[in-house]
Image (cartoon, rainbow, N blue to C red; front, side, top):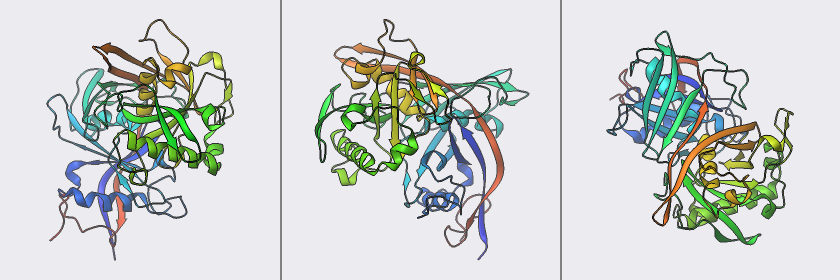
Length: 393
């Protein structure tokens, strides 16, 4: 049986890769999207490599983005993100990918969905997963989004043209509240660990933060070592799923989605090494963080989780605030020590009445279109489509 094909681009956004579709090239019936995305990525793959598709074998390289016309009055485009499983046949729409957000504005300009005059562009992106608005600011180069530049993004080789991303009003992206339980500090009763302290914050994406010392680790461990420690991974997954229940994202730990909430462990800034073997001195950082999702430790902190970490560091009483280097100005940049080096993020967090509010979280990424054309899928796995993206009769 012949293969099906759909027009698409393959792009890097920040420290992630994704297939990017125009919404009009996909079936109107979104119930059919999952089959297309799974087949395109090569999921499920019990070998964990996705060699029969476009995926790269880890969560940050198994993603799909869809760009379409705006459904929000303050946006120029809609952006829907899908996290595709690797070994398991899962498609998750509960969270946004902040890294791939960096590529959505340039994609819209380069595809002719939007136009921009001059040397700079600003695209207002409506992320349909979180119902939040992102402002993407980037340079233009002869009518298309600039790629070449001198900005170095840790975790990505070479340099590129920076994209400034401002996540507007990031609080409550999944739960509707910046502090889903109303508390800066909670206790979870987790099998194998007993009662432990956690901070659960939802800014950009929801994260359950735990102290590294609670897990018996330093916080500077590298992703490969964390992933290889079955006991540690089991503890983190138990914390994540029990946190999901407390945050109102699941009724039972067993029902918790694979993507949200994320789980992370925190420590003070410490001397460490990056995954490339370079020194990462404590003097350059303000706090140490590791973040996990979909059964993997991220080689570079997901952008939305970096936003969440920064916002949490400015909320007095959280575990992140406890370990972050003190500052007199809450708008100061936070330098997060993560496996690929330092990521710098800014936020504005303040008290309004008796509740904490986050006005924005902002940082810089780079992006690049890697190739475009058609993505092919076995016909046995996807419906037959007409040229306009509709299911054939």
